[in-house]
Image 1 (tube, rainbow, N blue to C red):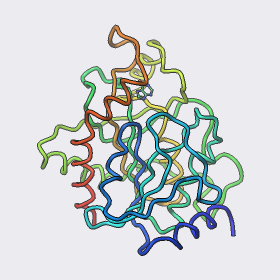
Image 2: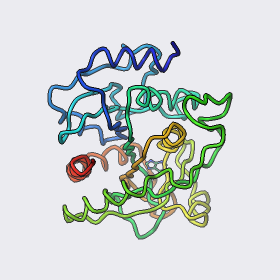
Image 3: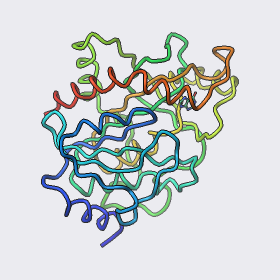
Image 4: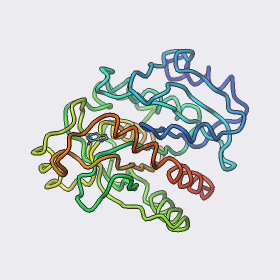
Length: 270
Ligand code: HPA
């Protein structure tokens, strides 16, 4: 058995029904998991081969159970490249989810607004991404039991799920943005020049997560929905410096509308 299978077996042995939808919740957006009724809770440290989470605002446990009638597996806290984990470790949970039978992944994050028409508190459905910086989760020998050596990424954000998210938002009377998420490794926030570069390249939001997991999910055939919470305007747009506290605080401010949107999306899944 490989490490993914061992972790999946450990989790599978502790749950009733296999999860169909995986959720990775970003900074300040963790609360939704607490709405699962009678969840099975597994701290990362208990699961064989699972890495641990060190980032602020991240709890570090898996919750499994039902939300809006759907079997879900929720990561409360994710692994970031900037924490020093190899990319392979960052995406480990995604592959474990796939081994557990998950069909689709919903990823969320806090992100800086690069598009100047955005304001903090906006939600953005990710339609595409730009991966900046070195490191790629699929570098190294390809495990063809997950997917091909050169996986296509032209529709990695499943259009049908993005559409479902926009419809769900409209039904709730929420205005959601759509756009391109740029991945920067961090942990420093970007410079104003970097943000001008990203805007020129077509990015609408910038962050330090999500893209590795999405690439791994696409590689192993999962459908993907990505949603960013714009926690701050990216560097150089406003006068004030960007702080970690404002990122976490923005997540807290939108948590209700964000949770309502995710619930509605889950309810609309087939
Ligand atoms: N830049 C990068 N990552 C982020 C930001 C930002 O401005 N805000 C939240 N995550």
